[in-house]
Amino acid sequence: MSRRRLLLALAAVTVLIAGALSYLASSSPDGLDSTTLRGCEVVEVDGTERVTGECMATTATDHTLSGSPLADYAVGGREFSTGLAGIAGVVVVAVAAGGLFRFLGRRRAPGESAKP
Image (cartoon, rainbow, N blue to C red; front, side, top):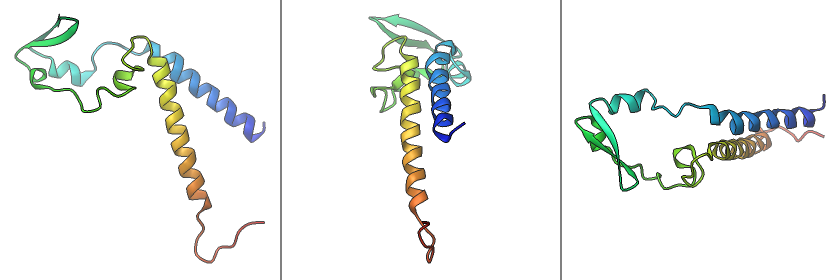
């Protein structure tokens, strides 16, 4: 198998995993969320969730990037867009890693000559 075909196959598998399997991820709160919500109740008021009771989550504030395009593992806050957010994340990481590898690959040790 050629290097190009291998890279394309790996890219396809990665996009498939990020795009399709992200819909199977649990929507239940993780351990940290569960712990901070102990002793509280989450209620919906005017279309937004509010935390009532006595727990750590009552003092929590939104992160400064909570309004960013990929916040909450969704594109623009749209429900059911976790697959697109996963694919976007894969693309961003691949471009950043590719650029870094290319940059580091061009650097040569002092006195090293270019390969023919």
